[in-house]
Amino acid sequence: MGSSNFDYPWDKKRQENRCSDKNIKILQKELTPYLRCNVSVGRVLLNNNNYDKNTSCQIGIFAEEDIPEGTAIWNEKVFLVVHPYTIPRCHHCARRIRGENREHPKAPPNFKCENTNCNEIFCSRNCYKLANSQYHVPLCGKNLQTILSLIRQGKSGNNDKNPLMLLKLFAMAKIQNISPLNISTLKYLTQFHPTKFSSPSIINTSATFPAIFFDYYLETLNLLDISPYDMKYDFWIYVTLFNILRVNVFGSPGYLCLYIFMSLINHSCLFNTIPHHATSNDEDRILDNYNSDNEVNENNMVMITSRDIQQGEQIFSTYCDPNINKVQRGMILIPTYGFECDCEKCKNEDPSEMTSLYSIPLWLIKTSEE
Image 1 (tube, one colour):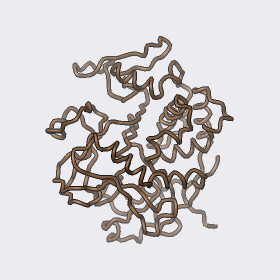
Image 2: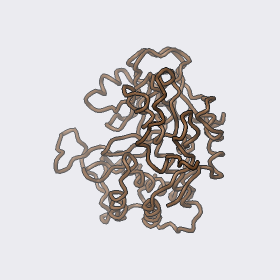
Image 3: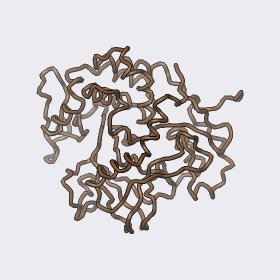
Image 4: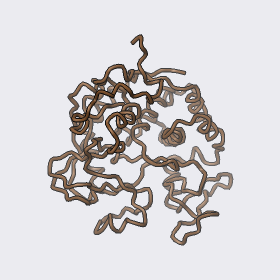
């Protein structure tokens, strides 16, 4: 339906602000309360040919002390979460709550919105208050069936529920009377930038969005009573937000979560940490002697070291299964995140098959004329 070359006026400014000294200091201050170990936020300079001028600098997390294997580095609450409304979950934190098929005594009760015309449910009054203060008020009592129907029509793998997350972000911006791109927490996150790759004829630097994508946008404006002529909520801002979410959301077929600090950990196939949901079955093992006033629930993300980490090392996670071969890893990393991994494992594997990434979506493939 339309194409994007990711060269909007705000893109370069966003990247400069992300890597500024001021922003890094703010990030460090906000990360510190969640920490179990001494780690710091810093810049990562990208000097290989896989990145263009818009992504020549990124943010990373670094160890400031030796960290043993099996250590919880931090425990992070989810910033934003959406679910498909198929089972009872808290509208704010997506925690499973009591319903027809869930009567476990530890499951929180069903706390309904105080508006009798609203069907949203919560796990506690606290989540209800947080939702109201952040995004729920403009959505309270609104019928989501149209946008849910559009999402079912336009299934696209892990991005199925991104329109719901975009809806919440637009609602959050409306409460603050700002552009969604000015939501303070989003300024920390990178976005999808398909760039130049070492392997020929794989990725173009533009992307075409299906027609239904514009329908998502129009229904978002309709639900929030936002004028399509309000430039704070322009369609290309919606596109930019989508490109931020697509490389930063985590979850499962049941829900999507956005974690701010987890999103700052860069990828390596030779990772040294593993993200772990702190469920009731293993939270005692993971959070042994962990002193924090953060409540642990099934959507908290705990970063666990998978090997000993030395002081000064960058903290890495893996964005794909490290046990599959380089071609298969590239088939995940390139179309989903817009980069080709440059770790030692990838450098030492035979790259000759990298041009056979036949499963990359057609809207990302270079044409023969190019």
